Image (cartoon, rainbow, N blue to C red):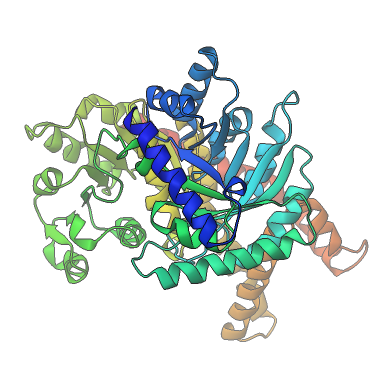
Length: 505
C-alpha cells in the first residue's frame, strides 16, 4: 500500500469520525484532494485509490497537468480551481475546470461566462468570502455578496453552487469556529432562495472537525495526502526583499508588502541614510550599499529613476553575485525588459508601473513579465501588490498605453479639477468651498460609474443632460472647443514621450 493510499485512508477515517460526532452522513461530505504543485504521478496514485475530485491553484500549471492526464485516459476527474483568479488566466480556467471555488469579483464571473466553451456544461462556481476580513486574504466581503450573486445569476454559462471560505491562520480555534458559523449562516440564507446552492467548503486538515460540525459539505486536504508542497524556491513570504531606491513609490510598495511580510525580511538601500530612517524605525535594514541589499534578498525592486538605472544595473552585473535565482522588479518608465536583460543577462524580470493613487490602495499597477518569470512568481507578485489597487497585466507594448492612461491620467484629472475650482472662485465661491464641491462632485461621479457597470459612460452622461438645458449648454461648448481632439493630443503626446524614453535606454 502506498503512502498516499494510507494517508487517504486516514483522512477518510477522520471524516467519518467527525461526521458521526456532528450527526451527519459522511457520504454527504466530499474530500477535495488539493493537488497544486504535485506531479501527475501522485494524482494518479490518489485516483487509483478511488479519488475523483482534485483542486488546483495555478491556471497554467493546471492546464498542462489536466491535458496530460486526459491524454493518458483520466477523463472522469472533477477539477476544482481553488486559487486567486487573475483576469488574464480566466480562459484556461473556463475551459479546464468543472468548478471554480474562488470567485470573488463580478468581472471574473463575466469573463468566465464569456470564455466558457459552448460544448461544455455550465461552470459551477462557489463565491469565496473573506471570513477574517484580513486585507491580504482573497475573497469578497460580506457586503459584496449580493451584487456578486446577481452577476452570476445573469451569466448563462455559470451555476452558483455555494460558498467557500478560509479560516484565519491562528491557533485559536474559537476564532476559526466563529468564522465558520458566520459563513454557515450566509450559506443557509442564500440556500433558501437559490435551491441549487448545495456546497459549503470551509474545511482543511487542521480545522476539519469544526468545519464538518458547522455544515461543510467539502473539505480541502493537500499536505496530509500528498506531503509537503513541492516548490523549487522558498515558500511565499519567506523570501527576503530588497529595494534599491527608497523613494515615494518604493515606500508605497513597502507599505503593501509589510501587510504580509515581516519588516525584518526587507532591506532598503539609498544614497542618504537619513532619508531611509523611516524604514529602519519599522524594523527593516537600511544601507547605502546597493550590493549589500542585492546579496541580502531573493526579490529586488529597482526603484531608481531611468537615468540612474543603467549605472545601478551595471553595478549589479559586475558584483560577482549569482543572479540566476533572483527576481528583479523594475519601476523605471521607458526602460524595456530587453535593455535590462542585456546588462544583467537574466530574464527573471518584471516591469511594473504603479500610479500615485496606489499610495491609498486605489491605484492601478500595470505589469508585464519576462520569459523566465514562473507562474508562482506571478501569483506572488499579485499578492504583494494587492493592497495597492487594481493590477493590470499586459504585453510590454500595452504597458506604455496603460502607463499613460493610469500613470498620467491622475494629473489630467487634477488639471480638470483645478479648472473647475478656478471657475468656481471667479464666480464668487470661496477657495475651501470650491475645492470641497469639486472633490465631492468627482468622487460621486466616479463612484456612480463604478457602481453602474451595466451602464455605458455615454448613457450616464446622457442621464444628466436635458436637451437645451444647462448641462447641454456646457457640453456643447466642450464639443465646439474640440475637447475630444484635445484629449487625443494629450494622450498621444504622453505616449510619444514614453517612446522617446525607450529609445534613450
